[in-house]
Every structure is written in C-alpha cells, then in structure tokens.
Length: 80
Picture 1 (cartoon, rainbow, N blue to C red):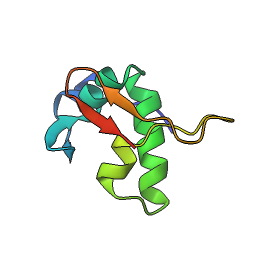
Picture 2: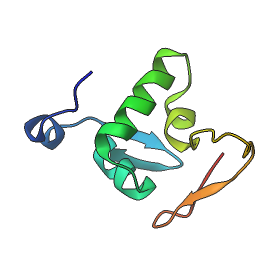
Picture 3: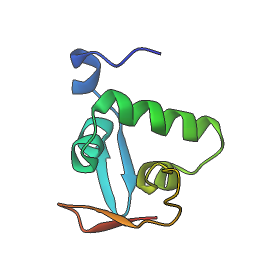
C-alpha cells in the first residue's frame, strides 16, 4: 500500500469521530504521527470491521500497556 499523494490529500474525504469532521491528514497531525502511518492503521482497522470512530480514536496497542487513555491535544477528544 502506498501513501496518498499530495493531490489526493487535497481532495480527501472527511471522517467524523468524537464530534469532529477532519481529513486523515488532519487526524494524523493531531495524533502526532505521519499521515501515511495513520491511514494504514485506520484502513487496516476498517477492513477488520471496526467502526470509523473506533478506528480513528483508539490508540495503537503497545506491548505491556493495555489500557492507556490518550487525548488529541487540540480537540480534547479522549482516545479509548
């Protein structure tokens, strides 16, 4: 899977989660990761049957750290 091009990002679809409607690039910036990494993570979760909101707002599982709540710093949206 390749990362979206700049042209694709400019016309990107908006995804709603936590009461906010943002592009993947905007969600990635708020989460502090690259847009490519964020999109791959969300795309995989959606293929696995996750809801859009859960796919966006749930932080990645880290070994030995099972229940760590995080927040998008600028939105005050709690990640599950």
